[in-house]
Length: 546
Image (cartoon, rainbow, N blue to C red; front, side, top):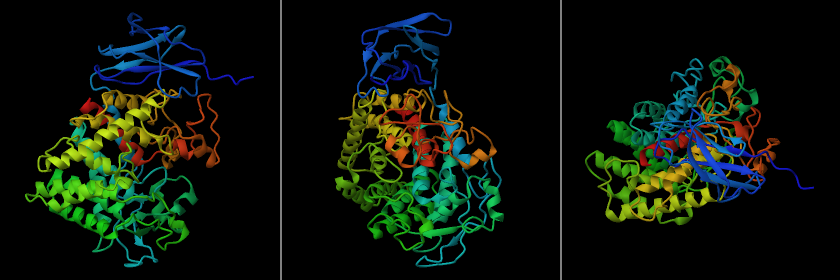
């Protein structure tokens, strides 16, 4: 006998702005194509009728999936979709849509602040950071100031890779979102200050602070670590290493900070990181391969480096123009890096580790706003063409599954969803070649994150329906639902979850996406600053460009 599928459900998204795309998904074991649906307001009045259409892409976990388009509903209010005896949760339509999600997600960054950077959930912590690892090629055993910044995920380690990525994403989001700009810039400055510290001496660049020994001692209040006698906890190691991936992302983040603040020291720091990445001519080595002990681990090891350097070059060109003397070598580098399609070709990802070239493409095409007139016309045309292609890829990916997730299902699907959805919105800046449904795809990615997914669950702790309450995070020592605003990894391929020894058991699991709000499951339930930064950019880009 064939296994029975999950019960039929209507999954909706929002909150949405009045003019945005609003498409509900109906999952069922029966064929419902052409069946009637209705939309009722808060008073129970029917304000729209229509017929279901077959959804594009895989309907899993249901045998069939259908769309109910309520985009015509543009008056602010609370609405439900009805199909026969099924009724959805409310879909909220309001001015500003989901813009307040940006403020909610910034709560995660504030919670994960370290050192003397004020956090709402813990006292000052890791004030002994850091001592350069004794196996480092230079400055071994030297104490340096690496306090501050953000703890990366559910643990307490710091990485240049994700700090630079998140800082750049927050800076770009601030340009797109005037309402939240001050808060976004304030948070970006936490990353900027740490990145400046991560280059403490000529030729010395820090890739990581802390190591895998953090995981050996479980979740705990970080404020207690300074008094610990445990190796790698009371006093943590800083690990020097450099590559084009770290140099390019750090240069982009610091150049953006210079453009905003005009501080010459930030432009100098951006130049240094970029030059070091260029000289390395490769990605940063995984730390165990760079000669460090096994406990250093191989976190965030990139395959490519030119993608990050392309974006660093784009931002440095803009920064030098702001300084009064455009250095065309950076524009030339940007074009040269984009010429290597194996490392910088369209992928619709903009990920923390790889595929960061699309960030620079969006900048040069004018998708983030700001003055791009100093770039040559041919450079802008190149960038806009690649940005448009990224948008088309995101559109195709969204059509591959009934729920419109425009990225690739992976460990950290929410980062893919956020970045690909943002690219769909940003691609509307391209004068030609962009997908016609870029805004619909972006809104769909937002809706996927906020509950229009098979599980009917928001992926932001404390925000939206069925939000996570058991994130895999040290903040759990203070109670459930902490830290608020954290974006968890979300639905992941079953192979990834099972490969880590977990077995999700939701009736809404499918062969390619499984999810559980369970603290132990760090694949689906661990938050990270790169997941959250990509999701912030998604909201900012959707509100600004659509």
